[in-house]
Image (tube, rainbow, N blue to C red; front, side, top):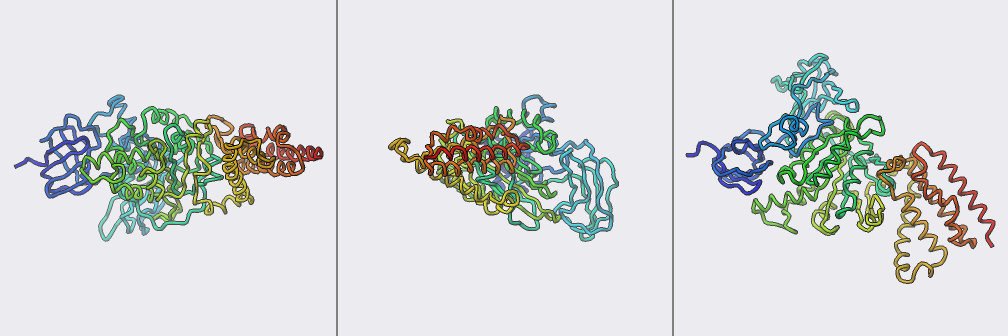
Length: 586
């Protein structure tokens, strides 16, 4: 008889074990003498298949398996914000201080420092009826995040006692709740199963945009708070930089950035850059409202699969406090590749291009955890999800991109030709779409009544330019009438003066909504006045050289967000110069 559960076979991150009589599905286990973290993913009688989240080199049949009796969980509580974790929520800084640059196999480190004390301020008196999601008190987690200590979702009853104002650790009891005659202790922190969505009271209709400061996104293809979006693009099209820009500038209360299977140098850039960035709204370090999950391509492939769930669970926790959270996953293609490798080792029947047949369901489970909601505590909050997709060769017909489109409502298609022409962000204006435009239109109308008209007019010009380019490729631009040459010029004006935006230009890296509308209104006024001048007989070549036209093209990098008055002066100069040139008409 076996002395206990034992390994019988090892195939990369997949381990078979026998003697697992007491094991449950998705239970966390410790494998081998080093105690490698694993998860039960298949049970047949006493035999189990275990997915191990660490390197299984030198693991051999006969190695012991220890059951923990708990599912794979994320530790939740004050101390998450500003921390950099790996895919299974081990804090990398704490590991580095103990073992250097390499994560040793079997490394066990508390996700939240159990010795750190937090200043707790009670917000409710004993005797009150409480239920899951209600705040018992608050902790100032960072200067930017006020952490609400909540009743765990599964509890409801009468508050028997609550700790007085003072300093406590995440493992200290701060309240006692009597549920069905049983006193239950509530600590400052608690675990939550990573694969289980946290409960809410109800879902809400989205209506407020997630302002990113990127013109082509906010004005042309907006994402609502609580919405879902995908950024597909081939190698070198700027997916990572685009996500970095969104993480830096979006007006979410909290950012969760998940580096899932990306190259180590890209994650290194994130880890070095984010701690030095300044929050544009408060002037404080951006890390004071950011959580990073770093799982690079050289880390175990199984941990890549679970990193997505680790990140989204932490996002839901802060959503339950009433915060608007933005989750950026880079990239879901690497996550899907991990699913494919694990499915192959589990000997599952492959579907398209070798991906598991469960790929659509797994993508749906991830994106459906976003949304605008009313929390159990009654607050309105949201989780917005932006997932990067890396289709091989930029082929948008491959399975991950196609299945992702089924579950998102905002599609920012990156184009390799635009990237090669150094037009960034390389989001193609005719291949992208947003189904949130109507939802956020009232918010934009409150800032600029003509937003929808300006947006529709600009898109019409870009669509017409695309058709004219087909003619130009056949007969050349000289064969076109003056009015069509003007359309081609104005389209270039919109591309260079509005759609293009440099992440390294201090003036233009972030564009406030008011400046976005002012710039678009400025460029379209050039279009309208030029159209009238051409009808009066003025040639396009003459209009292109007007100082006001050149100034309008350069306005995006000349005038900052606080210089709207200067844009108004430029608008007046456009009117003067076109009035003057109109007198030259024959």
